Amino acid sequence: MDSKALEELRNKYIKNPPEGMTAKLVKNMSDSDLLDMHYFLTEDDDWDGDEPEEGFYIDLFQ
Image 1 (cartoon, one colour):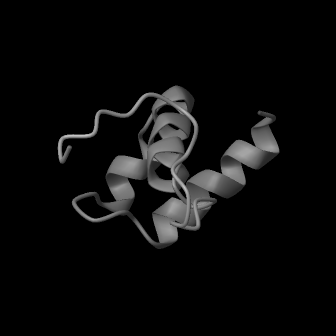
Image 2 (cartoon, one colour; image 1 turned 30 degrees about the vertical axis):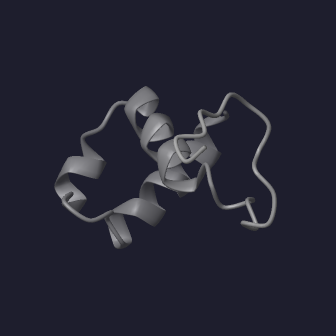
Image 3 (cartoon, one colour; image 1 turned 30 degrees about the horizontal axis):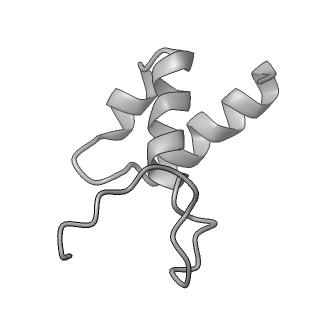
C-alpha cells in the first residue's frame, strides 16, 4: 500500500478510533499494525450473511 493510502487510513482511525483504542495509539502504530487492525475490522464487511464463506467450518450442531 502506498504512503498516501496509509496516511488516509491512519487519519480515518485517528478521527474515529476503534473501541478500546485512542487516537494517540493509532497515531503511534506501525504501518504493519495499522494494516492488520484495518483488516480485522473490515474482513467481514463483504459478507451478506446468506451463505457461508468459502473455507473450513466445523458444524457443532449436527
